[in-house]
Length: 375
Image (tube, rainbow, N blue to C red; front, side, top):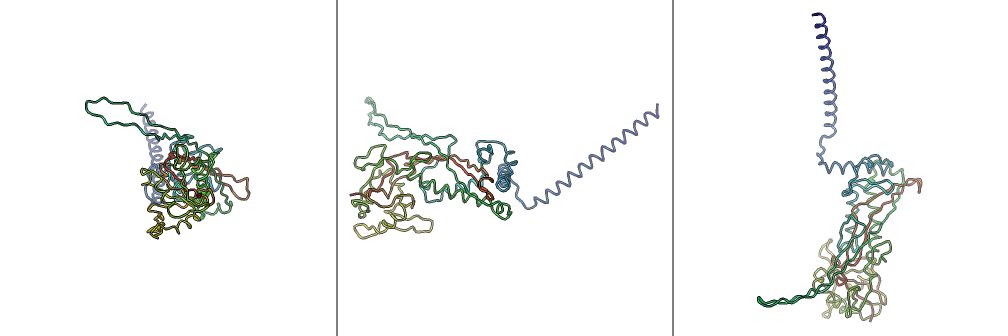
């Protein structure tokens, strides 16, 4: 009996020793791995959870753009609120936040109405703006007197649908395989350039069919008989020309005082060249160049935005606009930017089909006035 107990104890001791050796081996392996990871991460900043997710998304997007490997993007959790999420490959993948922010920065800095308009981000397919353009009634009241009923204001709903804007930059696979090639910077710059050109034209003269509605496509009427739903115009007094500086002065003061404080002139380069020559009654130029490289030129003290999509001077044209565009024009857009890789349609090159959704329309007809080159 004692022999059996002794044998059992010896077997148990051997099992304990074997378990101990196994645990020590696993701990040693874990310590070795941690040591390697520490060496690899030496000198690198510790990332927050959000930054780490963005970093992972950027790496996954890079693998997709260069080799078409979308496993990393598919592994990302779908979270509709963020720009760092993936969607079905059929519609493209949402680009990483850094690339998307680069595109947004370029768009904001371009010579476009976007630079002075009101820009809002939405999650829906349209954006509604309620505009109160009537005069609310008011009366003076005495302490003991009765209160008379006042008139109601006029409220309009302006619905801005979002349209799909696309770009299709192309790159060779050989260049994509070059590790030194900054794929993200190249792609964001190409997308931004194409988006900027298309947006700028649509915000000025878009017909609203599968694109934003430009402010120049709205009905116009002489400002003396202006009414809501149209944009008031001020004549230059010269067919196809600007007349003298008096027309510019009249344009400025045709705009209500509540808008004039935030007023901006909009015209193209050719019109600006003609406006620079206008003088007031004292022989002083109305145009003043900016005091610094980052300061816009000023016309009668108001900034000038050079937008090349504005029309040239011609009989009946409206080459100059003046208004508070932050009140008068609203741009609605979705934050997400999607990219779909197409290595088949343009072999040996790779196409990148980039899309975003954006819309725009006039939201306050009283906030914009136009200079019409007519007598």
